[in-house]
Length: 137
Image (cartoon, helix red, strand yellow):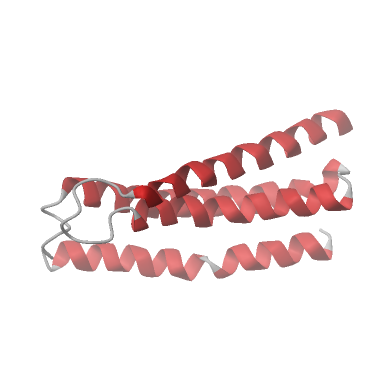
């Protein structure tokens, strides 16, 4: 792997403890029967989705980063693809969590758009990398 891809993978790996802390926080909310979580299905669902997406997207990003250098992308395009793969597991979960911050929120607020932005980052990075890999093959 190139130094740029290794550095990006390092940044992605540094996010893993935040996912673990988030999981522990969710378990604490469940164990303590904290009002505003168990009795709020919208908040509970979005926070569970945020936690799940964070974990899956971090793994996906780490796998995808192993292919960036093999795709023979221009330096700027490779940097963009790396950035997109880091942005997706940050933006999408943030949208899920921040859209229902208050315990009484029964509808997502405007920050739910971060999930769409994260999805667009994921789609763009995946398409660019996938097409480049097909061209190399």
